[in-house]
Image (cartoon, rainbow, N blue to C red; front, top):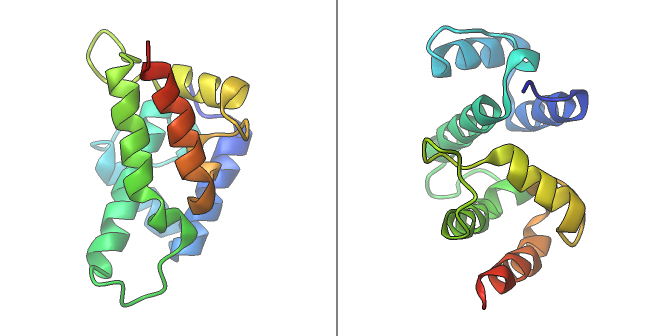
Length: 139
């Protein structure tokens, strides 16, 4: 399933905040997806997260010691990883073992305390979301 218009706009907002131009993004998408496409709106949910993670990794590699101003999004990266780790524990996976991102986003929008996608949560909001998810692990 291809990403929706809102997700596409959010992606471009993140890319612009990091400092990527349109041609930078198209080149990056083309490279990360093994030359399948260079058009962001053609990405499916799994590819979207793969490209987004790659963009963040490049940004972190550029500023490993926090030389540049660290964005709110980057501060929350460790907590997002914890969130996805808990999703693994809840077995929210596809048959191939990858996380079921449509299911996760559906849960976030329906039951997450702010009712929005994981990448839209601010750094300060993530601990409460993780606590909410951890409560699902308790019997």
